[in-house]
Amino acid sequence: MWMIIELIKPEEIDKFIELRQIFVREYDANAAVLDEQQSKQLSDNRNFIAVGATVGFELVGGLAAHIVTNYYKGGNDLFIYDIAIKPEHQKKGIGNELSKFTKQFCIDHNIKEMYVAVDENDENGLAYYRKTEGQERASRFFVYNFE
Image (tube, rainbow, N blue to C red; front, side, top):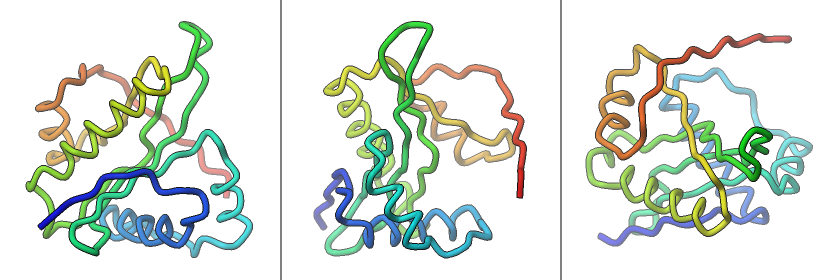
């Protein structure tokens, strides 16, 4: 079966919505439906990227990321906000291909650093990222909700 890793274009919002549903299922997120205004904000945002992984004709996973300005080093960084692959397609190299594609995207767009947060109780996520070329740093995120 063939696999394609590619950017999801802004006009392919339906494809991103499908990818978002994969994130919602994989993270057991209680997420509201993406409304028209939010869809437009994402498709108009030049600092937001989504990458899809398709096997055959099925979207099986991907990632969503934000390009952020690095005001210490200059240039931009890439913060991977979400990454997920459907369980039945995990451990088949799709995550590695997503990672390679995204690293090349960073090189092609002169992005200096790429980072992703992993919950410390996410054993699968930690095991995966420890096998990659990234450097693990001890840090914690503090989240403030204003809803």
